[in-house]
Image 1 (tube, rainbow, N blue to C red):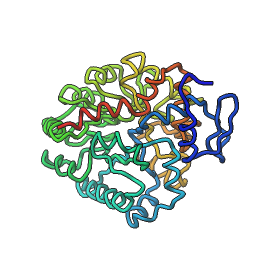
Image 2: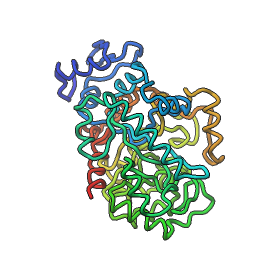
Image 3: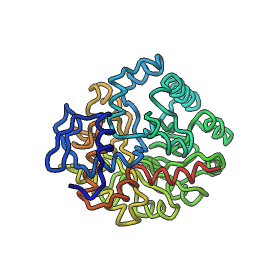
Image 4: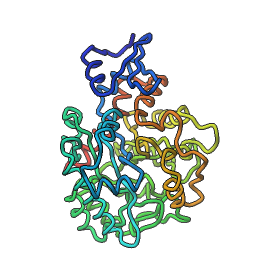
Length: 382
């Protein structure tokens, strides 16, 4: 039925979370409201892995997030169950906060999440170190890893320690635009990391905060790999060789990932994956293949860059507001999400795709989260 060992205990465990199984030639229908069936091998791999999505906010809906921040116990049981059933054990919930006072905006973001998590300790675990990544699945809780997609809130190097103390574990050096540290991917020019930025990277290394360059410009990205004494993450991006979009990474940058012993998470965002239609899950899988063929699967991970339901399921006005925040070079099309990767159980579809692409069990477990766990253990060690 499957090359993977899939015991009755595994099946009962997964069934207790989500199940209305239907056996059909070694395939199972896990969720009563969905007709999709998954192979026994895929189910066993999800059960075996600690699944880490290195960019997945719990919600992209600012109104819902505001409700949770104002009333931390307002998340309903049915809302929480979606995260439990997703197959994702750890959500990196980083956002790009900024505005006229990035420092205050970042404090608001961190305080909101800390209040929410403190009130939801029976459901969620704040991920503070690699040991938390190891035990979150056994705890039965959902892990939340706090990061930010911009480092403009660091007014001085000492602020890195301040925010680390508040629970921030990952910081993207720039969002799409220029800040005092370096340049974003949609800036007209990219002079790389500034002297101030050098001091920020040094302090991040010292306190064990992960440097992320997903949205950084090409020169700023390469500078980070050259300057950092610890591995630099690309938590959520795609491959320039397959799609010439400003948010994708060059082969030179991808090779730097391997040289530093780091990991690159692949997104399922439609315009990052492919510049024309049709765009399918197979096109997203091509990006996994490209990185694997270039530097090896041990440097691959998931950074879906969406919440459980994706952008296209948002209320139209919120979708419009999100699109309005980006330059024309982002190249939005009618849809932002890709069918098959636009629903709460997308990691099952992704794992199924990796099985189709002939990845081994160990390779898939690494991509699902093991590779990010390995590199974060290195980065977070002080």
